[in-house]
Image (cartoon, rainbow, N blue to C red):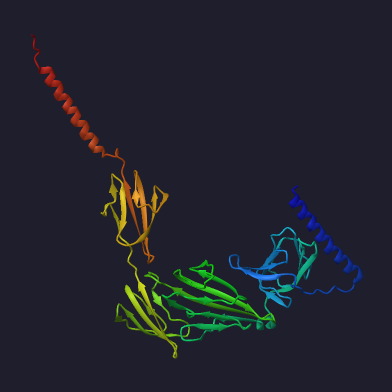
Length: 412
């Protein structure tokens, strides 16, 4: 057994012994009265991991455990709760209505009821035992708990007509230059409170917020921002926007930001009839100019719609069968994905060697086109050609034979 494993086993044994001694003492001294359970989350600090979407609770020496909910010293309520730790020197015990649950490094609490959770740890730098404790009710949230949670979309108020803010229950502010649900072509800037827990996705994938707060990559963004006040109340707000700085094929139906109505839509300078102020169907290609307002404020955006796929050329032609190398070009700037006989080659623009190639081109607007081309081996001659060549050789041989046979021998 390695020293690390031996040490971890020893720590777990010590923690278990300490907890059992506490339990035995309580049972012997208070046989008729169940010992009271008091929550205490002071030994740990709380943070949020966007990638795992888990709340992390860290002791002073860096050891941590995780949970799927934000936990406090007060009343905690959740539909389900996941709590666990990957640390060898952290011991988690859970008591429910029917007694202690089987010891585990991770618990997934789904059955309705009240639970008492103790997370014990011996600090690595001082060998001091510490314990974080919390209670949680699994099932329907109580009316009191619901009052402590405020959810919904952000409520933005104008600062100067160009920037907007939402004020959370703890007094902090979320400031941005883009409206909720807005589609823009300029660079959005987001200022998120340091005390907030924020998760962001771009086109459905987890996105890391730049330290500058500037969003420069095109895509559809969705955010969830949560803040807590000193009384344990939580406010969770949702915010979304779309960014298209260049031409895109993703503009099919345009919707104005929340609380706004469309007032004008133009395509390449020509007005497009508006059948509904809540959305516009974008069918044409080119530059759109869209205006919208909420009564007091009018905003606009210029967007370019392109749904035409690129055209591929092979050695300057549209042929698909060659007996020599192939140079791939396109009528617009695009990225290539090339496979040869099913094997990925990457983005090669020169195709060498006999085989069947599949070329997929994607332009900046997201349009794609695909083509299949073939380079034949030099020996890949039509069988009919072999027959003709063989026939010519046979005829030539016969002619030569008869000429030589009928030639008279000359004696000198």
